[in-house]
Image (cartoon, rainbow, N blue to C red; front, side, top):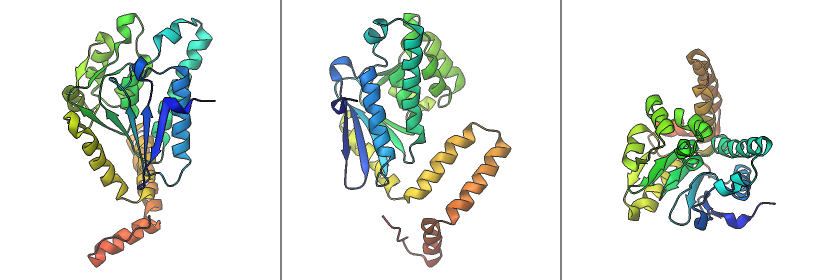
Length: 260
């Protein structure tokens, strides 16, 4: 059983879920228990049709400092490490598979698997003071799994530079290179996240769900297959009541009356 106190689950009246990493004394490092709790929270959100968006936040000074190195060092076996990294990969892939957008609310450092977590979120908002690194190489451990996420979000050479140097980058650099969407002052973080969420929840859930699934599918295939898949997805979307109402509302020059 996972410890629910390690990830706080809150859902507001709009259907916006906030998952808060709650291991501040360890900089929210991803222990096995925290990975299990975050997986359970993501699965809970995925199974609730009333959820419209998910925010991943954190308590304490750091957003997430990656894997728990003390826990990893305590059991040096190939089988253990393979199981651990498979568990982490499953959790981060769950973010991509959720039918609603997932936003990282980054208020502090995000390193190694913590940087991977930010990269795997669909959107990210960070404070100016936030910093990012995949610093495993400094300990002799190349951040291979974070590299999968980074190489799909950042310019390739910049992602590789981060991986081979282990150097920190600023929030401004992270935005410039594509790791985060927006950078704000500390006192504006919640307002900026809410502004983004409000834009999302004002749209039909079914359109967002179809679009998100297609967005990630088409990235992994050739352009011909991508356009074929996109065409089928748009045709299915067009048959949904939300799209039919939206188009009719445009024709009628009125606001669409979408169902909640």
